[in-house]
Length: 364
Image 1: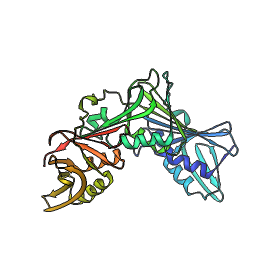
Image 2: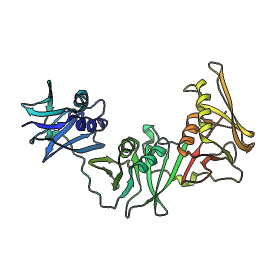
Image 3: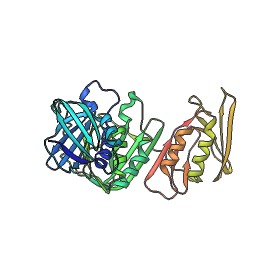
Image 4: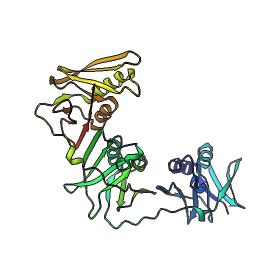
């Protein structure tokens, strides 16, 4: 018997579900989405063995469907169906027939019994956050995680407790971002490292939700966002003792508009290359002098940005890291503290909001 579902409902869900699927799979069924009619709902599931996406969708009618089909191809088909139409799904003789109006597609399937599950039952309490707040926390933190395979233990966001509240931290070895939230730390919950890919998917889903429930143990994490469940494996490793390297604030910080400085950095870096990312950062009286040179092409750029300062250390920074730090810290004005040219620079809002960022200097 065919199951019938609204095309818009199915297409929207498959866009998120297909994001889990890897481009190349040595296990064929992992390229598929599992479709299973459960009562008056259609459950769709995708997995890459590290992350699992589940969503329950309302059916118009039908029952008895349980199969898997190529996720990306199926998502493309449902996305091509006219808005407001319905889609009929029926499996027979190892093939799934998809019908909508006068259109018809037939796709090969893999038995649902071959599709893996990622079970998870947390024993600790969890947290409940407004979706937009959680999305903001992730967006401000994830940029500073490592992308190097050898540094897997910092390739994610560190969830830890500080003063009975949730604190998140991230580092790539050159920047450090720490954010204290107002969310109470769950009783008996362990400190964990949440992989960046999982966090980014959660950010996208949370931004469209009113609230998000998060549960975790020392192995896995599960987010419930309305009718969506996102389960993921955590990074097994020890996050560095970041508290030891948080730079101290000085008595006479440089104060400036982070957005103006960030935009200036983006303009200056237009002369740079992958090999020349260092920018000269030299505070003067009432301004910051920015300079960047690419000796290979004999290109250079400079700009002055207004600031509340009387001078300071002439130092160098990776232009992308400094711009990323300014965007993550945000605010109307920021303080930049640096003890000497070789010290980590501390960046925070003039009116504190719980966020601080450290940026390592570079030789120039």
